[in-house]
Image 1 (tube, rainbow, N blue to C red):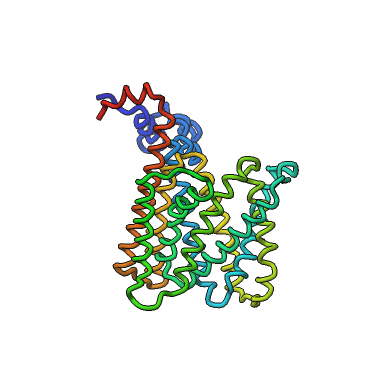
Image 2 (image 1 turned 60 degrees about the vertical axis):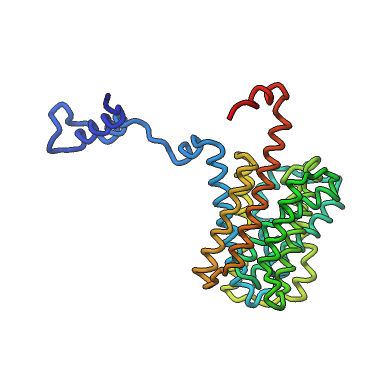
Length: 350
C-alpha cells in the first residue's frame, strides 16, 4: 500500500522546521516554503461548500431550529412582565431593520405589489399567530408549546380540501385524524380543567397553516423580499394600537430580551430559508423536528420542566402522523414526476 502523499509532505515539512534534525541543504528554508510543501489548505467556507446539498441544508435547518428555541427561551423570560403584543411590535420593528439588506436587493420596483389586500389579510393572520405563539410559550411548558406547533401539517390537510379544493386520499386523512388524537392526549382532558393556552396554541397552528396557504398564492406574483416587506409593514401597523395600550417600560434586562427575540427570530428565518433553498424540501421538513428535542432539553435545564408520559405519548403521535404525511406526499410527487415507462421498468426492483 502506497504512502499518503499529503502526509509525506507534512513529514517533510516537519523536517524543515526541526532545527536539530534538518540537513545543511535545508538551511534558509522559511515558513512560506514549508507551507508550500504542505500544499493549500481548505478554508471553512470551501469545506462547507464541498458538502452534499442535503447535508448543507440539514445543517442550516438545525441551526434555524436552535435559534427558534433560543427565541422561545427569551420569550419565556420576558413574559413575566411584557405582554405578547409588546413583544410582537418590537419583533416586527427590529425585524424590519435586520431585513433591510434583503429589501434593498429586492429593489423598489419589485417591492410594489398588486395584491396589497391579500398581503394585509396575510399579515392579520400571521400577526395573530405570532402573538398566539408568544402566549403559548409563556403559559405552557416549552416542549408542549413546541409539539403543538407541529400540528400545522394536519391543518394544512384540512385547508387543502376546503380552500384549495384538493383531493385528499384515505392515507392522509387517517394520518391527520391520528395526529389530532395525539393533540387530545397532550391536552389531558381527563385530568380536569384545560388551560386556555392549549386552545391558543392549537389555534395558532391553524393560523400559521392558513398563512402558508396565502403565501402559496402570493408567491405566484411576488418574490420573498416583497412578501416579507409587506408582512413587517402591516404587522407593525396592526400591533401599534394594542402594544401602546399594554405598554410597560422595559428594564435594561427586558430591553436585551426584546432585542434577542427579534434578532434570534430573524437569524432562524434566514437559516431556514437557506436550508430549504439548497436541500430537498421533504428531507428538510423532517429535520425541523429536532426542535422538539432542543425544547425538551432547554425546558428541563433552564426552567426545570419535566415532560410527563402524556407529553411524550402525544408528541410522538403528532410527530409520527406529520412525518407520515410528509413522506406520503413526497412519494406521491415522485410518482407524478416518474414517466410510466420508467415506473414499469423499475417495478420489479426490490
